[in-house]
Amino acid sequence: MPTFEQARQWYAGADPVHDFDHIQRVYHMAERLARAEGADLEIVRTAALLHDAQGTLPGGEARKDHHLASAEFAGEVLAAEGWPAGRIAAVQHCVRAHRYRDNREKPASIEAQVLFDADKLDVLGAIGVARVVAYAALAGQPTFSQPSPRFLEHGEKEPGEPHSAYHEYLFKLVKIKDRLFTETARYIAVERLAYLRQYFEVLQAELAGER
Image (cartoon, rainbow, N blue to C red; front, side, top):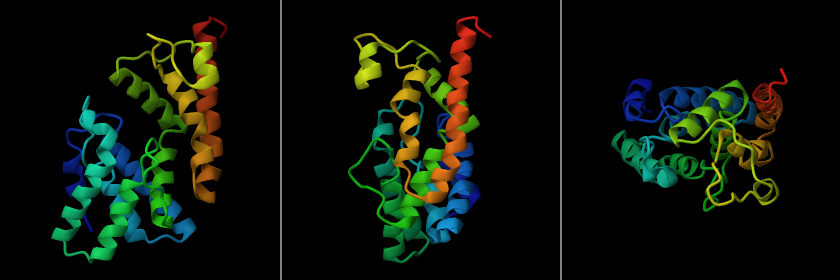
């Protein structure tokens, strides 16, 4: 199994939203979920270390297919370690199926579901606030912009409408809990989502001078 020292090198140039700190958080949450849900810990730990290993450079177009590139990279790393083909495939499935915006390969194994859930929980709660604001900043977008009626109703922006951190919260983050697979993750998501919701409520009140 790859070590933390090895994995750290793979994320040396990653953006602040997908850096090694993110990997460590996902790793530890995945361990927690795996133990609660009866998943294979070695598969889960290895997939957590490798799931963003390729395609996470700042501003890179490769980001949209990083899960596919990372799965291919995982195969190379684990083959070099002498892993059996079946277990390599299990890790690769976890990595390919972890991306929220790609439904081509859904998490079919409990290990893939655990990785998916651990990765998604990292966009909720206190760390979720930091990540969604950082993600907007990396994209040159504001923390808050009032969404258009069209966006609020259909999730589609008007021409020139920014995609603020608040837009991302409405477009994706409030829907995360309903996309999770494991009972343990859904339980954790309730409190984390409440914290995220409160943050944006307070932010809007502060921007309006109401508190």
